[in-house]
Figure (cartoon, rainbow, N blue to C red):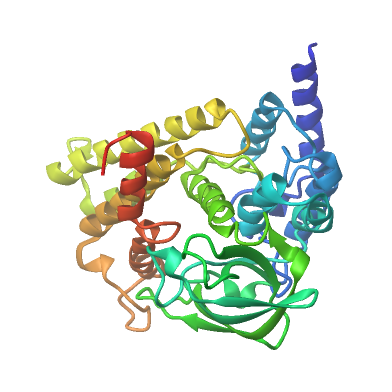
Length: 396
């Protein structure tokens, strides 16, 4: 038995013995928030995987990882998928700021922050966009003023996803207002437990409020929690965005991408509303649309696997924008397909009328919520611009 075969055998045995039944299939996946109480099996699964170093399997051991090779990582994901194990930890800690710290952090910063992130000790929010700085992010106005060993932060961030449940936030702030706008920005880590940080949820058209507005009124941060050096935030922040987009695209291997890839349930759902005729969907237009969507979904999964296999470093490149965008568009297409098949049943808001089911209401709200997929993590237009310039090499 060679080394990889032995690793697979040991991994399979360990997972079977240590993954609780309640941490398999669908259910709670922790992202580190201290304010969200974990189900017992999810808590045990997180603790066991963190101790093993498999919450961040490719990270160095001294920072809470397991230093798995790419082949070992693939085996781990295969075995997790086989038993339907949920990802033990996900979110902006392991997928965004963690890999950014690995690349740009000082040794002291990495030693202080990374083991905590790997253990799921605190959920992270992302402080980039502002009311006056969205796609033109370099126009951000949140200020950081040096005061001895600290910086004082004042300003406002918007679309800070899940901030109401987060313990920390990494934010782009202006440290040198007299410099050109791209040159006076820094990336800083902020503890959100202080009274100087206020979070207000923003309600979406789906009725949910995962996005928030976050206010800083004389918030205090350590001067040594600026990542990558003062006024180097534009470079560091852009790299972090590549990690974000690769996560949306399903190709970020900095944290675990474990968990079962569920077989598409879309065909069965559509059958219930459209019906069958001669062994085929009764509606020929929906039949053709569904066939194309299923082919696109399969192609997307193959592309994700190829992108993971072809990565030459832990940091993804600009192709993450292409995979992220195609993934978002395909998911939205599936929602549109289901809405078309459901007809009036696809526009239900509540079950209180006695005529709507939970599944129908959920489908409506999912359709509305996932309109955000081509906004969050960089808009569709921004991704197309990156693809044109950085991937295809087109001129302005």
